[in-house]
Length: 341
Image 1: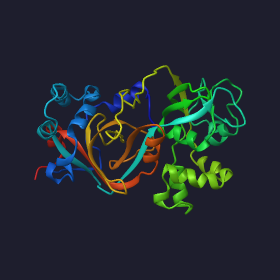
Image 2: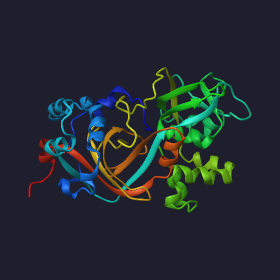
Image 3: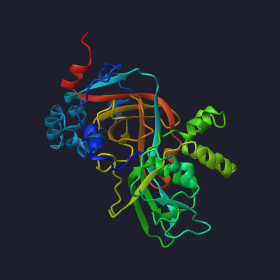
Image 4: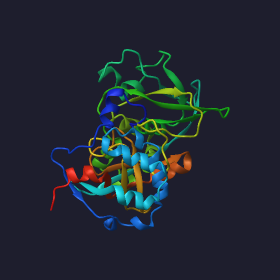
């Protein structure tokens, strides 16, 4: 998410509906031996991730596959027997980014160091209220209404918490608060990083989380204005769950390096997906579509979940790479979508 996190029932029902053709897009089947690095992957790790959410797919073609997956069959043979790799066109270079479960430094009360609030969802929130843009909220539109969960010290970390949709706040006494997505102000998400590239402030490789942070530190006032280009604002709820798991849009635990966020208009939530990511950290592996986000748009777009904490954040923050995304669909569904011949 989200950007990601808990979603309303109606939207989730749409996500879990049967995979169907999208107008204006073509589907091309490929062979498993055409997937770069397929034979070398850890298919068992992918199967374990798939088992966590396969039951959430409502389309009937998936039910027997999910049932058999839970018998722990030989993993590679399982995927090759029941699935067909399908590329959703137009197959322009995919865009891969990374996300993680961030840990922010914070306080239950505002101080000179901890100045940036994490807000609960306001009651009677009206979609696209012009008085509740990111800029308006940053300037105090919600201050003094008792909606603050905590205050954090880094505005860029807070901005990316909004994009991640969930995270953790470490208080001064070491206590951890877990926060999850509770809603948003209804304004359309617009990428501040992409806008910085458009303006020529950053080049494309520098528009990662780490790149934006480094640029922000050079001129924080200008940086705040750049972040406010994105009028979308996410509200949170405090989670009581004290486990170490991170949950995605399906409300199932995510697996580091094996879960991705996708655009559910094109990729079936819960489906296995083969990714071929370039860049300095090449990834060729089978992952599972278990999350989504407002910044994830298009058939060749994926956000890779790297796990929780600073190390995961460092890795995720460096990802802004091209490549290819191939969805594994049950043979029956692939046969319907892919033209014969």
